[in-house]
Length: 245
Image (cartoon, rainbow, N blue to C red; front, side):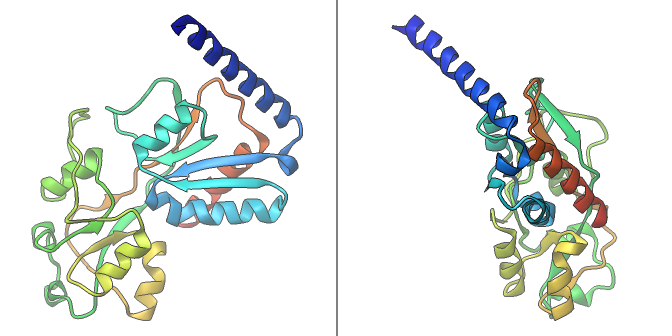
């Protein structure tokens, strides 16, 4: 029975792969693209990139999911996703994956108007850390930085435990709302914070803390043919990222 199940699973995977290869021949106009992205890239660039993609190819079907980085990696490995956009630590890296680098963007701390931190000319990281941080799960060097005064590790390590912020969210829009009505501090890119800063809902903190930066990349399965839709998305996504540098 176990032998039969193993062989059957191999046959089904081969059939699925063959069907996908045939569908790729139809081109981008009739295809489908599935993407999994972590919260930060979802808001920063995945949404705008998908918008531009479907504007050019309105008949393309796109499935996009916001998920934890580890779930995204497994779904790419299992061929449930064509592409992933997430932070992958050294400990989590799987050699079956191809990682397409994405230039990092700086993250700024923001808080509500009237926040006690705004009374300080240039609060340091320790002073900022006295208030709740509202963001997603922190992994790798970002987890280390939050526990070490904003300093990043000087050597590569695969043994950095995840760090849970005081207020952990999967929706960055929710994170900004929480910061607007509490003493929580929210880290975001300049583009992500622009509307809230312009409207006065949030104020950017001018700190002397070391600059935090995004660290995600594009994930795809090695040896799997990249569809025309996936290639087009990667090109547009990187262009959107570059515009926001």
